[in-house]
Image (tube, rainbow over the protein chains, first blue to last red):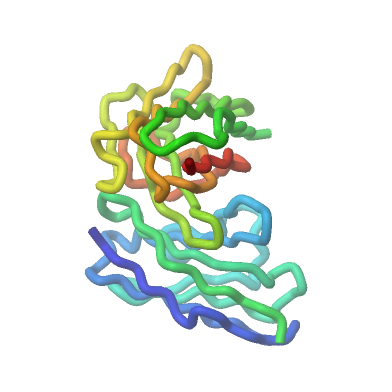
Length: 108
Length: 122
């Protein structure tokens, strides 16, 4: 199975700053089938990005995804107060589906 | 509006069984594969099991294979997870999740329920 490693574990930033989150795969993710989710405290995860770069409907354009192969990045430009949460990557290029361990973006 | 409402969680002793249900509404249920994903308290996400639209393809995580059984009833717009021989490490919030595709188990997860909590303890 593909193991996803997210870094850093925690990112301490101020509103208005840029967040750069990394997701590294133990082997190449087929067809860049990589998704990103946001989870706020006490809530279910929410899909942000699929196919490594495609934003789902309703997600602001300050969220962007990039990468291919084994290295993927989620960038959040100009952090808003509602963006402070935990972010997970997930690969769906091969079975079983696997998730990264998460990156917590917290207010500095 | 898409809704996924899980039920059936609770406190259960190790070795016992529990059956989770998920009632789906707001979309054509049999146009989608469905999954169960769990999250242990304070931990990350773990895929548990998935089922294609017609139950023709089913998959399980190694951690639950042989103990859990996923099923669906398209006439009732419902997804189920039969959990047998429960262990303490199965304690988690179990989410019912929709896959945008219908015939594969390798999809992203576009709609999530709020989860039902399963606690395995004596």
